[in-house]
Image (cartoon, rainbow, N blue to C red; front, side):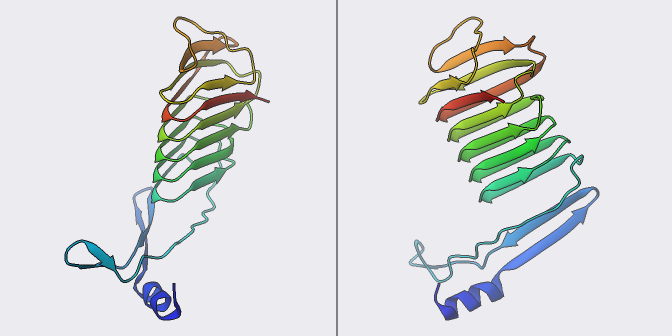
Length: 189
């Protein structure tokens, strides 16, 4: 953005922080765009804002974003993340996890054994890394991609490059991964 437009966008951009009960909401409100003839946009394209939050590691957390990447590290509580246009990257996690995005990759790295996990994306690949001693019951499905594993993936029932169901080390923790356009990769450490 040029100087004048950047200053105006900054002046009109609002950051809202609201606490309701045990929930904290942080929201960026961009200036309204003006339209010419009802369909041509002109004026400000909005601000780009990055948030960095420090939250106690054992806290149960739910993140949501419309247009941006979600990155978190070191959570031991339940963690859930939803994105519309952006990737989700969770590292050093040690609790149940739920990640959903429409357009973006999902990467999870557990600090130890995998815990109950559900991942869904439409346009993106899924990568999940966990300790090799994890007891996992997996359901993996892709439409336009394939399935890879860094370990021998025992399969129950139907298997192909697009679908796999099975268990590893007894299969006590469920892992569900689903994507339309992307590859699913499981990796043990």
